[in-house]
Length: 255
Image 1 (cartoon, rainbow, N blue to C red):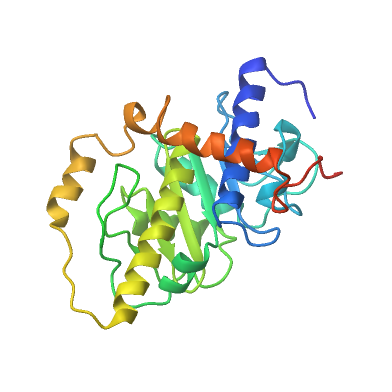
Image 2 (image 1 turned 180 degrees about the vertical axis):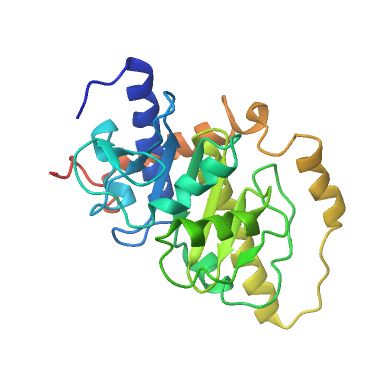
């Protein structure tokens, strides 16, 4: 891999940790699923290399640098074919610096539903409200045109369901798409459970929840960063790695 600045190497190491958190939290699906980070020098984005699981991503060596046309500029290994998911979000939404595409079980199942995802239990700022569903996302999103249509469907949301496929999440910081993905899968689990119960139920006033996005408290670093939510998942990951959790590789996977 080309020489990296200390700050970029630290960011990619943190992106690797974010991938392992996703695996630990049930977002992994064999060797599919990926994260990307906007390159600070404006060259494009750093994306997880193909052929390894989210739980096998160790450090900066597990990422490749792609421009927004998919040309590989640095890094060893191959890129995922769905790179346009990340490039088009970053190209069309300059406030977004980190992205994720995963296939979590409950959210993937819910993506087949024709009913909008309602909030059952309102929580902190990572939880999306009425995330849209992209109907043309059933197959792989490997072209810029389809990915651009996905971004249009996504609007200013931090998450979008891909019909019969999975989810895409994003945010300004590395931890944002991870925390949104975890919250979204939990929302889908709750919605599927209460619908299957046959019980009558109501949902909270979503206008109040949407206000979080309007007043800037959604994905507030003061709430999810520092010593709060993100560090909780990092501590949980450290314990799992120390205990030898089988979902997490114990050594780097050869390229």
